Image (cartoon, rainbow, N blue to C red):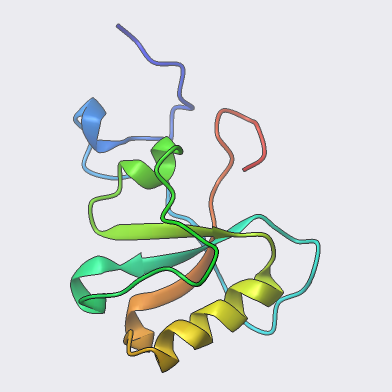
Length: 110
């Protein structure tokens, strides 16, 4: 069975070793520019939890198929950077956290 993913997308369950690389964003961020994700490198982060009121994304194949990272969806970059800082204050290493924008799925905005 052939999948209708764009030709540049390869995900592990399709026998490819990689995925489309998300765009890493830099502070300060702003309102109305989301959704974005806090990407957590699980091996480096150790024990961690998402910011209050947020969960790890499980219903998006772009996030679910990445074995090295967990993704927490946030409505805009302003909040994402605030939550990232909160997570570092709670003991998550800063090197394990980044704010990213995922590439669109099949021509549809993320």
